[in-house]
Image (cartoon, rainbow, N blue to C red):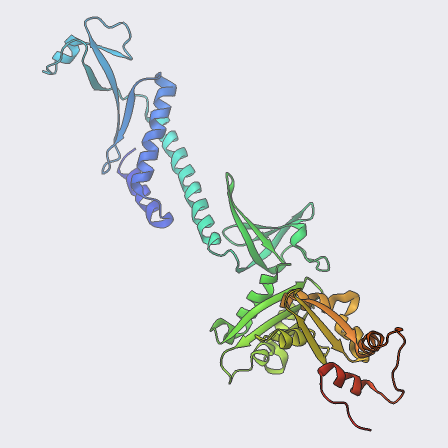
Length: 379
């Protein structure tokens, strides 16, 4: 090793951010290991001169009258030749650099430097993606193995597990894909980056990318509920009365929300106006249905909703999806009934024998008035 070796380490320090002192210490340790392996275990140390790259091996030996083991002992006469004042039993440090150690030393230095570069790069990649947990990354599908999808992110590879894939999506090699980073793990083989296409956070981050008002903090995303590949509901709010939070997310001619729908391969998105009032929030969350009454039970955390007869199926949704997403979005259990069902329940409760007693002339508008607690219309 020479000055060129030191210059190379300095270049590595600039490019990879690895301290030259750390590399030299690691190289010294590697040379010591190689020395012990090839020349016997001794109480030795290796020293590399920081400017020239020259290395020397030193061993500690006990001063004796007659040497029986030259690896551990040195004759007192050999010590006194240099003018040193030593006595029997002293421990002295002697240079023992082998003459044929150069090739072994070079190989050991190469291995340790390469290893430290790999470990440092892994550490930098780990730190980079650890800071991106909960964020979106864009990559290219590289391969599929046992339903696992591996995505090339440039400096690293991410794993999209089967449970994090949308069943209705089909991707092939070389497809560009956006995913949500859910976790970054440190392993012996480098950082393992776990990503998702099903996480609600993906929808939230996509809106942040597409809607400047959200990125700037003018519009805030309060909640997201999602059934991946099918439908999502997102609740938004703006403290600025002059900003329409829903309109900002929809965008001119629906361009902003359409871009997100396209990225999610046609997943429908309902943008809901958030409200601090549970009554208003639950009513909004059931969109596109329009409830005519919402009753709140604070103790049981239940919202009892009444809708027109013709909107009952719309409020519940296909296989209960609309009601289910609304419940997740608001955090309230939602019990939905039509006007007719509520009218039957009220009439049944008001009659001792449980028989209905409803005038033929009453229509749904009058029933709705009962539910709201306002006077009926006069015929």
